[in-house]
Length: 551
Image (cartoon, rainbow, N blue to C red; front, top):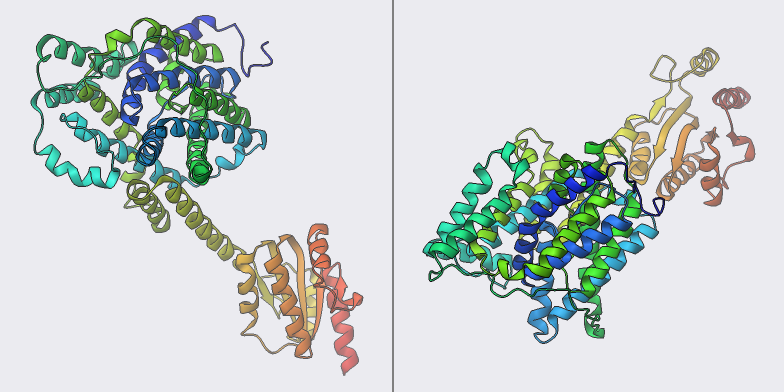
């Protein structure tokens, strides 16, 4: 049994029990708040926390991780629900949760295809801008319920435009409860927070104040919440919507994978262990797939709940599964107790979540950050907030990749050496230097090193443009270990240019892989076999003989 569940053992049972209980206490208000924020209802947040939390722990690859609805996943799910409810009011919610099932299946496929390592390669400025954008979206959407108004269903831009009017006309009771909630979550001492989480305290205090003093006021509450096990809902597919559904599912799957694996790295750092990223994706995918069948919110590895679990002693999947079972017990018997929770209280809790998601550390470094990294981060942030999440990540990754290619190209071009005289910067032996001196600039040694990518291809030919006074070129590739198609074409052009001007050219020393690429691309065809040699000294000797024969 223990070898089937990653990291499972029973040597830390007391710590796992403490961790599971503590994580459940923290997860309760957040699950309710995320459910309400999504538009699917508080119970959807609870079902998501229960199902994703249990099965991600059971089948995942990060033993101490606690999963459930998170801020980023809720933002995406909110947009999905709004989109499909607007287009199909009768079964839009069923379509939205079918998207959750599809997203979970995509995550499972990611894990099976072992794509976890690649998700970890998303550049930091992209992640920073993306997460900060998510944080700002949560804050913007929750400011309206904080002061007693409903959040618009027309998207983040409309919500942003409506804020001045809504904030200038606050509802008294709701605003009081919202402010009290913010004061508690921000002023509750960190030491006490370990014993009794500030979010749960705010939920208890805010609800108690409402029940005792504001029942007839203007503060809106959750109302009736179902109690008991969730019902099974079969997926709903429509052919005309499949492309849109798949796109939304891909967003959910990718975001959930990134969110979970980042939390896995945090868990590794806290526990001095190493997670299995592909197994974690499979576990998250199973959890989200099952959550979709029971109309639970999609989830991911939750950083706050994971850290709380670890601090309380949780180290194995037992703590994550126990956290879900405790939430299930609450749903089974305490649904009526949550009916009086005010929306303003949940909004205050979520605003704190949004503020915590923003990457303030990077924002503080803006004056000192590299300009291009800063540009990528800000672009991703703004596109996340005002366009959509998948466009933001796509633009960010492409921009970061292009900048990386440019930086690598510059480094590769710095490694290119054009040598006509000994004593210049070159890896020449004593005999090689002697021959170069003897030939007095008639031989040009073109030395390449490192990987030669397509970004450096044009630079290779540009380096030659200012040198004319030589008769033989020695293209030294003995230190090149990787080459791509574009670079092959650049080398082919160099060969043709040299031959067209009546010069001789020798190619020197190939890595087996490099030679194989050049041979398959027919780059070596114009050259006589005697002009493809395996050492620099061999080429220099051949060049000397050639020049001496011409005299």
